[in-house]
Length: 276
Image (cartoon, rainbow, N blue to C red; front, top):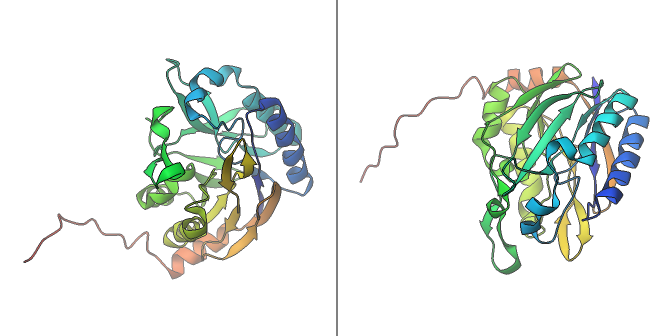
C-alpha cells in the first residue's frame, strides 16, 4: 500500500507566500508518511483578475514554485504532484494550467495541460470564461507512474467529462488525480457527487486536492477528498488549509473491478436511433 496526501491551500497573488506554505505543508505530509503528495490547482498563484495571468506568470523554466517542488521531492524522497501551476505560454498570449508529476530524484516525469477550460454561464459573478486567459491542453490525456502505481492526471473542470476518466482507467490508471479550485456556487451541489461518480464508474481511487478560503474577494470551495474505488470517503478536509491522508491499496482496485467489471463491459455504440 502507498500513503497518499492531498494538500488543501488558500493560494493568493503572493507567490513567495504560496511557496512558503507549499514547503510547510509538503514537509508535514512527508513527515506523516506520505509517499505521493498532491497540491491543488493554481498552487503557485491565484488572481482575482484572470486576464492578468499571461503578464504575471512566468514560463515553466523560470517558475519558482516548480523549482521548489523539484527540490522538495528530491530532498524528501517523495513523488510530488504539483496539482497545477499557471505558466506563461510560449507565445506569451495566455497561460497554461499545467500539472507536473515530480519523481523522488527531482526530475519532472510527466506534464498535463488542463483539457477543458472553465467556460460557464452560472449567472452574475458565476460567469467565467477561463479560455480567455488559459489555453486548453493540446496533448490529450496523460497517465504516469508513481511509487509503482499508474495515475491518471486531470484538473478541476475536467471532472465533469466522464469520458476522460474512462479513458485514463482504460489505459491502466488506478488512481485519478483531480486537483481543483472549485466554485462555491456548484461546489455544494456537485463536487463530492462528481468525485464519487468518477471513482465508482472506473473502480479507481480519487485524490482531489482543492483550494479553499477567500482571497481578494475570490472564494473557493475547499472540501478536499480522497475516495475509494467503491465511493467511500477515506479522508476529508473542510474549509481551511489542511493535509489529508489515506492508504491506496492496488488490490482494492483489482477487487472492485473484478466485482463490477464495467470497464470490460463497455460497448461501442452505433449512431443513436430516433424513433417517432
